[in-house]
Amino acid sequence: MDFRKRKPPPQEEGAPAWMNTYGDMVTLLLTFFVLLFSFSTIDAQKWEKIVSSLSGTPFVAIQAIDPGGTQSESSSELDLKPTPTPSLESDANMEQIKEKFDELYEKIKTHIEVNNLGSLLNVEEQDNAILIRMSDSALFDSGKDFLKADAKMILGSICVIIEEYDDLIKRIRVEGHTDNVPIHNSRFEDNWELSASRALVVVRYMLSITDLQPQKLIPMGYGEYHPVDSNETAAGRASNRRVDFVIESILKD
Image (tube, rainbow, N blue to C red):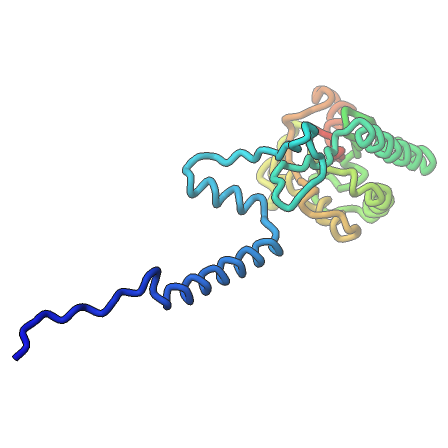
C-alpha cells in the first residue's frame, strides 16, 4: 500500500464565491432602505421621544448652519425647531376683542333703555366682564323658584343679544341672592337653597332658548351672604334679593 500523504487540494484565492452573492444582496437591501428613508418624513415629536428614550437624556434640536456662513431659514422635514403658535393676547387681537365686548355692553344697555326696563334690571361694565343685575321680583314670586311669564320674555330678549357674541364669552356666572329674612317651607330649607335653585332654573331656561354652550353657564347660590345694601330696611332687602349675570370675556384672567 502507498502510505504517502496526499497533498490537500489547492485553496482558492480570495473570498468564497457565495460571499460575493451575499455581499451584493446586503448592498441592495441597504440601498432599498436608504431609498425608502429618502421618501419618508419624520414626526418631530416622535423622533424626539425616540432619541430621548434611547439616550436617557432630553433631546435638543440644533438648526443646521449653512457652510457658507449664513443660517438658512427655510424649513426642512428634519428641522425640529418649534413653530410659535399665534397668541390670543397679541395687541391687535386684544384690542379687537375689547371693542367687540364693549359693543355687547352697549347693546344690552340700549336694549334696557329703549324697552324701559331700568326699574327691573341694570347693567354695568367691569374689568373684562359685564354685570347684569335683575331684581328677584322681575323673575320670581316671593319664596318661589318658578320663572314668571314676563321674566321669560325679558331673559329671552337679553339672551338673543348675548348669543351673538358667544365666541367672545369665557363663561357666564348666574348668581342667586336673597335678603336675610329666614325662609322655612316644604320646598326650601333656607335662603341658600332658594338662591341656588333660582340660579339653576335660570340657567336651564337660558339653555332651552339659546345655543350657548352649557359649560359656559355656571349657576351659583349665595343666599344672604353677599348683600349689596343694608338688610335693615325694606328697600335694602329688596335690593339684596336679586339674580346677577356676570358675563366674562375670554380675556378675563
